[in-house]
Length: 171
Image (cartoon, rainbow, N blue to C red; front, side, top):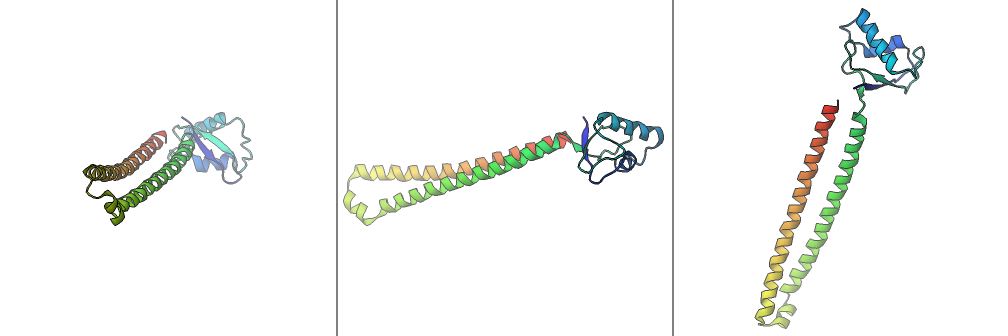
């Protein structure tokens, strides 16, 4: 799989060789490697390579293994950045929603404990049972909200870790 190399300053094929060629190789191997670079880049004038020119670099003997980056790496990096941002936004919205529900539960709990409510309800066992059920439901919702945040954080972390692994495989 060819890699890409972006030329930073105006250069020539000879000067480019310094950046691309592995110092352990020379002579015919170096020439063959540079011929492969030329073959992959018929669109380039190798007598005057302009800054910003993107070259395809083969993975071949004679060229530095670090010369250029994988053609897949930039899109994966961009996707990871977009996904990371989206996951962060979604986590924020989840927390905001949970906080709003927690505030609603707190208001309801305060109302159920108020003197005015207790006076109106009196000794009615049916209403007392419903209040107990409501309190249990609110406690369950609170646990569920917390678990949702933990699950989302774990899934987000695992997803980004998997993308990191994919990026390593892509080079």
